[in-house]
Image (cartoon, rainbow, N blue to C red; front, side):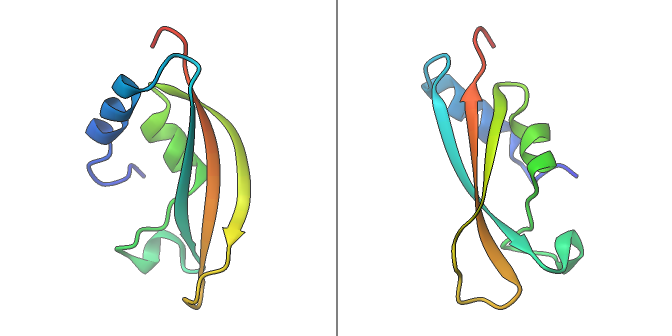
Length: 86
């Protein structure tokens, strides 16, 4: 499932970043998954790869980066690297 209206955002971010630059992204993970709606939207690794994959290589998931005071929701971190020549 593609993130809503993210392709232009991903393209713009890639235009500002040097080749092989590192991008740190934080997103929400909900216990109910995508079916729980949004905003905030539930985002998984596969969503990031689908949306950023044209410009970035997925490097690593950091898992939960800090606790949220919202039941059933986690804040997760991900590292991507700007692809050379893309």
